[in-house]
Image 1 (tube, rainbow, N blue to C red):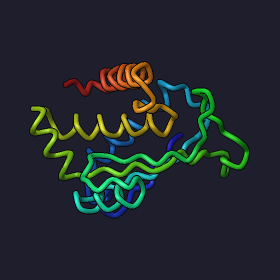
Image 2: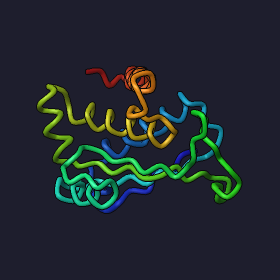
Image 3: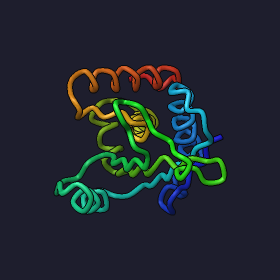
Length: 159
């Protein structure tokens, strides 16, 4: 079982988008065969909010679409879950923050639905929380993006 903690802005999303986020989180965990119950914090913000967070956390002063803040360690490509990471038999994977205006702009730019863009950003971020990082090199990028597309296909969130 996965529980998602939604911030106030995310709670204001239509119910079908909240359900989509839950489906994306669940599907990513299923594809990765994550063996524990999990918890994820999911936040929606605006462009200025994500820019400020990007600056504070990554020292990058620009708007981005999504930020991921993993809580678990990865060693040699393996996600490490230790006893102290467990709370009531649930693992807190981390935080996902999405700029809704940026997601809407990208959906329009790429010619697909907001649902597809929100699903893409959620799956992408979940893979980061599960230890994937496309900035580690071309092999890692290829692996992460292939996994991302496989999950989106399973969710029927086509381009």
